[in-house]
Image (tube, rainbow, N blue to C red):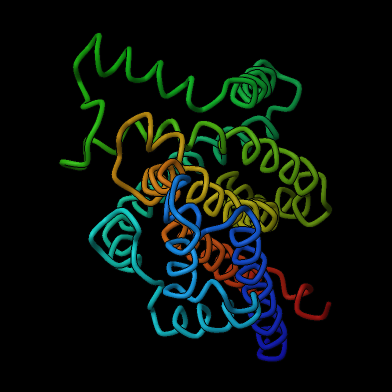
Length: 305
Protein backbone atom coordinates (compact mmCIF):
# COMPACT_ATOMS: atom_id res chain seq x y z
CA UNK A 1 0.00 0.00 0.00
CA UNK A 2 2.86 2.39 0.81
CA UNK A 3 4.54 1.72 -2.53
CA UNK A 4 1.24 2.33 -4.34
CA UNK A 5 0.72 5.59 -2.41
CA UNK A 6 4.28 6.76 -3.20
CA UNK A 7 3.79 6.13 -6.93
CA UNK A 8 0.51 8.01 -6.95
CA UNK A 9 2.03 10.90 -5.00
CA UNK A 10 4.88 11.29 -7.50
CA UNK A 11 2.41 11.20 -10.36
CA UNK A 12 0.24 13.83 -8.63
CA UNK A 13 3.21 16.15 -8.17
CA UNK A 14 4.16 15.77 -11.85
CA UNK A 15 0.59 16.56 -12.94
CA UNK A 16 0.43 19.62 -10.65
CA UNK A 17 3.71 20.95 -12.04
CA UNK A 18 2.59 20.39 -15.65
CA UNK A 19 -0.80 22.05 -15.11
CA UNK A 20 0.74 25.09 -13.42
CA UNK A 21 3.20 25.53 -16.29
CA UNK A 22 0.52 25.20 -18.97
CA UNK A 23 -1.80 27.65 -17.17
CA UNK A 24 1.03 30.18 -16.80
CA UNK A 25 2.10 29.92 -20.42
CA UNK A 26 -1.43 30.14 -21.84
CA UNK A 27 -2.18 33.32 -19.90
CA UNK A 28 1.11 34.87 -20.95
CA UNK A 29 0.54 33.93 -24.59
CA UNK A 30 -3.06 35.21 -24.62
CA UNK A 31 -1.83 38.76 -25.21
CA UNK A 32 0.57 41.46 -24.12
CA UNK A 33 -0.11 41.96 -20.41
CA UNK A 34 1.85 45.21 -20.34
CA UNK A 35 -0.39 46.73 -23.02
CA UNK A 36 -3.47 45.48 -21.16
CA UNK A 37 -2.30 47.06 -17.90
CA UNK A 38 -1.30 50.33 -19.50
CA UNK A 39 -4.35 50.64 -21.76
CA UNK A 40 -4.69 50.62 -25.51
CA UNK A 41 -3.92 54.34 -25.83
CA UNK A 42 -0.81 54.32 -23.60
CA UNK A 43 2.51 55.56 -24.91
CA UNK A 44 5.23 53.10 -25.83
CA UNK A 45 7.50 54.26 -23.00
CA UNK A 46 4.67 53.73 -20.47
CA UNK A 47 4.11 50.20 -21.75
CA UNK A 48 7.82 49.48 -21.52
CA UNK A 49 7.99 50.83 -17.97
CA UNK A 50 5.13 48.57 -16.89
CA UNK A 51 6.78 45.65 -18.64
CA UNK A 52 9.96 46.21 -16.61
CA UNK A 53 8.03 46.88 -13.38
CA UNK A 54 6.24 43.52 -13.51
CA UNK A 55 9.17 41.56 -14.95
CA UNK A 56 7.40 40.97 -18.25
CA UNK A 57 10.58 41.78 -20.18
CA UNK A 58 12.24 38.59 -18.91
CA UNK A 59 12.07 35.22 -20.72
CA UNK A 60 8.93 33.20 -20.03
CA UNK A 61 10.85 30.45 -18.25
CA UNK A 62 12.30 32.96 -15.78
CA UNK A 63 8.89 34.56 -15.25
CA UNK A 64 7.39 31.15 -14.56
CA UNK A 65 10.18 30.17 -12.16
CA UNK A 66 9.77 33.41 -10.21
CA UNK A 67 5.97 33.04 -10.07
CA UNK A 68 6.14 29.37 -9.06
CA UNK A 69 8.65 30.08 -6.29
CA UNK A 70 6.41 32.79 -4.87
CA UNK A 71 3.29 30.65 -5.33
CA UNK A 72 4.86 27.78 -3.35
CA UNK A 73 5.22 30.24 -0.45
CA UNK A 74 1.59 31.34 -0.80
CA UNK A 75 2.33 34.58 -2.67
CA UNK A 76 0.24 34.72 -5.85
CA UNK A 77 0.88 38.42 -6.44
CA UNK A 78 -1.53 41.31 -6.18
CA UNK A 79 -4.81 41.90 -7.94
CA UNK A 80 -4.88 44.56 -10.64
CA UNK A 81 -8.41 45.60 -9.69
CA UNK A 82 -9.00 44.80 -6.01
CA UNK A 83 -6.90 46.46 -3.29
CA UNK A 84 -5.94 43.03 -1.95
CA UNK A 85 -3.50 40.27 -2.68
CA UNK A 86 -4.59 37.34 -4.86
CA UNK A 87 -4.07 34.95 -1.95
CA UNK A 88 -6.36 36.99 0.31
CA UNK A 89 -9.08 37.12 -2.35
CA UNK A 90 -8.98 33.37 -2.91
CA UNK A 91 -8.83 32.67 0.83
CA UNK A 92 -11.92 34.80 1.44
CA UNK A 93 -13.97 33.36 -1.45
CA UNK A 94 -12.86 29.70 -1.41
CA UNK A 95 -14.95 28.63 1.64
CA UNK A 96 -18.16 29.66 -0.13
CA UNK A 97 -17.30 27.63 -3.24
CA UNK A 98 -16.13 24.66 -1.16
CA UNK A 99 -19.40 24.69 0.80
CA UNK A 100 -21.42 25.00 -2.41
CA UNK A 101 -19.56 22.14 -4.12
CA UNK A 102 -19.80 19.92 -1.02
CA UNK A 103 -23.54 20.46 -0.71
CA UNK A 104 -24.00 19.91 -4.45
CA UNK A 105 -22.08 16.61 -4.29
CA UNK A 106 -24.02 15.45 -1.22
CA UNK A 107 -27.31 16.18 -2.97
CA UNK A 108 -26.15 14.35 -6.11
CA UNK A 109 -25.02 11.29 -4.13
CA UNK A 110 -28.16 11.29 -1.96
CA UNK A 111 -30.31 10.98 -5.09
CA UNK A 112 -28.08 9.02 -7.45
CA UNK A 113 -27.00 6.08 -5.27
CA UNK A 114 -30.49 5.07 -4.02
CA UNK A 115 -31.95 5.58 -7.50
CA UNK A 116 -29.17 3.54 -9.10
CA UNK A 117 -29.58 0.74 -6.57
CA UNK A 118 -33.37 0.66 -7.03
CA UNK A 119 -33.07 0.73 -10.83
CA UNK A 120 -30.62 -2.17 -10.77
CA UNK A 121 -32.61 -4.25 -8.27
CA UNK A 122 -35.91 -3.76 -10.12
CA UNK A 123 -34.33 -3.89 -13.56
CA UNK A 124 -36.63 -3.21 -16.55
CA UNK A 125 -39.44 -2.14 -14.21
CA UNK A 126 -41.18 1.23 -14.11
CA UNK A 127 -38.68 2.31 -11.44
CA UNK A 128 -35.80 1.56 -13.80
CA UNK A 129 -37.47 3.41 -16.67
CA UNK A 130 -38.26 6.41 -14.46
CA UNK A 131 -34.65 6.57 -13.22
CA UNK A 132 -33.28 6.45 -16.77
CA UNK A 133 -35.77 9.10 -17.87
CA UNK A 134 -34.59 11.38 -15.05
CA UNK A 135 -30.99 10.72 -16.09
CA UNK A 136 -31.71 11.77 -19.67
CA UNK A 137 -33.60 14.85 -18.48
CA UNK A 138 -30.81 15.79 -16.11
CA UNK A 139 -28.17 15.65 -18.82
CA UNK A 140 -30.35 17.42 -21.39
CA UNK A 141 -31.31 20.40 -19.21
CA UNK A 142 -28.42 22.83 -18.54
CA UNK A 143 -27.81 23.54 -14.88
CA UNK A 144 -28.14 27.30 -15.36
CA UNK A 145 -31.65 26.79 -16.79
CA UNK A 146 -32.52 24.56 -13.86
CA UNK A 147 -31.12 27.28 -11.58
CA UNK A 148 -33.42 29.87 -13.18
CA UNK A 149 -36.40 27.55 -12.70
CA UNK A 150 -35.49 27.20 -9.01
CA UNK A 151 -35.24 30.97 -8.68
CA UNK A 152 -38.64 31.48 -10.30
CA UNK A 153 -40.43 28.75 -8.32
CA UNK A 154 -38.83 28.73 -4.85
CA UNK A 155 -37.51 32.28 -4.78
CA UNK A 156 -39.96 34.50 -6.62
CA UNK A 157 -43.25 32.52 -6.62
CA UNK A 158 -43.17 30.86 -3.20
CA UNK A 159 -40.62 33.14 -1.53
CA UNK A 160 -39.15 30.27 0.50
CA UNK A 161 -35.48 30.84 -0.29
CA UNK A 162 -33.27 33.88 -1.00
CA UNK A 163 -32.25 34.22 -4.63
CA UNK A 164 -28.86 35.92 -4.19
CA UNK A 165 -26.13 36.72 -1.72
CA UNK A 166 -24.19 34.75 0.90
CA UNK A 167 -25.90 35.93 4.08
CA UNK A 168 -26.68 32.47 5.48
CA UNK A 169 -27.00 28.76 4.84
CA UNK A 170 -30.34 29.25 3.07
CA UNK A 171 -28.52 31.14 0.30
CA UNK A 172 -26.65 27.95 -0.63
CA UNK A 173 -29.64 25.60 -0.95
CA UNK A 174 -30.81 26.51 -4.46
CA UNK A 175 -27.27 26.90 -5.88
CA UNK A 176 -26.33 23.50 -4.44
CA UNK A 177 -29.43 21.90 -5.97
CA UNK A 178 -28.61 23.43 -9.34
CA UNK A 179 -24.97 22.36 -9.11
CA UNK A 180 -25.84 18.82 -8.05
CA UNK A 181 -28.49 18.50 -10.79
CA UNK A 182 -25.97 17.93 -13.54
CA UNK A 183 -23.86 15.39 -11.57
CA UNK A 184 -26.81 13.22 -10.48
CA UNK A 185 -27.54 11.46 -13.83
CA UNK A 186 -24.01 10.23 -14.52
CA UNK A 187 -23.54 9.05 -10.92
CA UNK A 188 -26.90 7.29 -10.98
CA UNK A 189 -26.20 5.51 -14.25
CA UNK A 190 -22.77 4.37 -13.04
CA UNK A 191 -24.27 3.10 -9.78
CA UNK A 192 -26.95 1.21 -11.72
CA UNK A 193 -24.43 -0.37 -14.09
CA UNK A 194 -22.18 -1.42 -11.23
CA UNK A 195 -25.06 -2.87 -9.21
CA UNK A 196 -26.37 -4.81 -12.21
CA UNK A 197 -22.99 -6.51 -12.64
CA UNK A 198 -22.51 -7.16 -8.93
CA UNK A 199 -26.01 -8.54 -8.34
CA UNK A 200 -25.33 -11.19 -10.99
CA UNK A 201 -22.08 -12.27 -9.30
CA UNK A 202 -21.76 -15.68 -7.61
CA UNK A 203 -20.90 -14.32 -4.16
CA UNK A 204 -24.10 -12.27 -4.09
CA UNK A 205 -26.17 -15.33 -5.00
CA UNK A 206 -24.32 -17.24 -2.30
CA UNK A 207 -25.16 -14.57 0.25
CA UNK A 208 -28.82 -14.85 -0.76
CA UNK A 209 -28.65 -18.65 -0.44
CA UNK A 210 -27.26 -18.35 3.10
CA UNK A 211 -30.42 -16.50 4.08
CA UNK A 212 -28.79 -13.14 4.78
CA UNK A 213 -31.21 -10.21 5.01
CA UNK A 214 -31.71 -8.30 1.77
CA UNK A 215 -30.40 -5.10 3.37
CA UNK A 216 -27.11 -6.81 4.30
CA UNK A 217 -26.71 -8.34 0.83
CA UNK A 218 -27.35 -5.07 -0.98
CA UNK A 219 -25.29 -2.76 1.21
CA UNK A 220 -22.49 -4.89 2.66
CA UNK A 221 -21.85 -7.25 -0.25
CA UNK A 222 -23.14 -5.57 -3.41
CA UNK A 223 -22.83 -1.83 -2.87
CA UNK A 224 -19.28 -1.93 -1.51
CA UNK A 225 -18.00 -3.42 -4.76
CA UNK A 226 -20.27 -1.43 -7.05
CA UNK A 227 -19.38 1.88 -5.42
CA UNK A 228 -15.64 1.79 -6.29
CA UNK A 229 -16.01 3.52 -9.70
CA UNK A 230 -18.66 5.83 -8.20
CA UNK A 231 -16.12 7.08 -5.64
CA UNK A 232 -13.64 7.90 -8.40
CA UNK A 233 -16.28 9.68 -10.46
CA UNK A 234 -17.61 11.56 -7.41
CA UNK A 235 -14.16 13.04 -6.81
CA UNK A 236 -13.98 14.16 -10.44
CA UNK A 237 -17.47 15.64 -10.17
CA UNK A 238 -16.44 17.52 -7.04
CA UNK A 239 -13.55 19.04 -8.96
CA UNK A 240 -15.94 19.88 -11.79
CA UNK A 241 -18.22 21.62 -9.29
CA UNK A 242 -15.35 23.69 -7.94
CA UNK A 243 -14.28 24.80 -11.40
CA UNK A 244 -17.73 24.81 -12.96
CA UNK A 245 -19.40 26.90 -10.29
CA UNK A 246 -18.78 30.05 -12.35
CA UNK A 247 -22.22 29.98 -13.99
CA UNK A 248 -24.16 29.02 -10.85
CA UNK A 249 -22.38 31.55 -8.66
CA UNK A 250 -23.03 34.22 -11.28
CA UNK A 251 -26.75 33.37 -11.45
CA UNK A 252 -27.12 33.57 -7.66
CA UNK A 253 -24.49 36.33 -7.10
CA UNK A 254 -22.70 33.98 -4.74
CA UNK A 255 -19.34 35.39 -3.63
CA UNK A 256 -17.14 32.37 -4.37
CA UNK A 257 -14.06 31.81 -6.51
CA UNK A 258 -16.28 31.03 -9.51
CA UNK A 259 -17.85 34.47 -9.38
CA UNK A 260 -14.40 35.93 -8.67
CA UNK A 261 -13.04 34.18 -11.77
CA UNK A 262 -15.84 35.63 -13.92
CA UNK A 263 -15.19 39.13 -12.57
CA UNK A 264 -11.44 38.78 -13.05
CA UNK A 265 -11.76 37.51 -16.63
CA UNK A 266 -14.12 40.35 -17.56
CA UNK A 267 -11.72 42.89 -16.00
CA UNK A 268 -8.57 41.24 -17.37
CA UNK A 269 -7.23 40.73 -13.84
CA UNK A 270 -4.71 38.10 -14.93
CA UNK A 271 -2.95 37.50 -11.57
CA UNK A 272 -6.27 36.52 -9.99
CA UNK A 273 -7.23 34.26 -12.91
CA UNK A 274 -3.83 32.59 -12.74
CA UNK A 275 -4.10 32.02 -8.99
CA UNK A 276 -7.59 30.54 -9.30
CA UNK A 277 -6.46 28.20 -12.09
CA UNK A 278 -3.60 26.92 -9.93
CA UNK A 279 -5.78 26.42 -6.83
CA UNK A 280 -8.49 24.56 -8.77
CA UNK A 281 -5.86 22.39 -10.50
CA UNK A 282 -4.33 21.52 -7.13
CA UNK A 283 -7.77 20.55 -5.85
CA UNK A 284 -8.18 18.23 -8.84
CA UNK A 285 -4.79 16.63 -8.19
CA UNK A 286 -5.39 16.15 -4.46
CA UNK A 287 -8.89 14.76 -5.02
CA UNK A 288 -7.61 12.32 -7.63
CA UNK A 289 -4.83 11.18 -5.29
CA UNK A 290 -7.23 10.66 -2.38
CA UNK A 291 -9.63 8.80 -4.67
CA UNK A 292 -6.90 6.42 -5.85
CA UNK A 293 -5.92 5.70 -2.24
CA UNK A 294 -9.54 5.16 -1.19
CA UNK A 295 -10.21 2.85 -4.14
CA UNK A 296 -7.05 0.89 -3.31
CA UNK A 297 -8.32 0.46 0.23
CA UNK A 298 -11.76 -0.65 -0.97
CA UNK A 299 -10.39 -2.99 -3.65
CA UNK A 300 -6.96 -4.51 -2.83
CA UNK A 301 -6.58 -5.70 -6.44
CA UNK A 302 -5.89 -2.09 -7.49
CA UNK A 303 -2.71 -1.96 -5.40
CA UNK A 304 -0.98 -4.56 -7.56
CA UNK A 305 -1.44 -2.63 -10.79
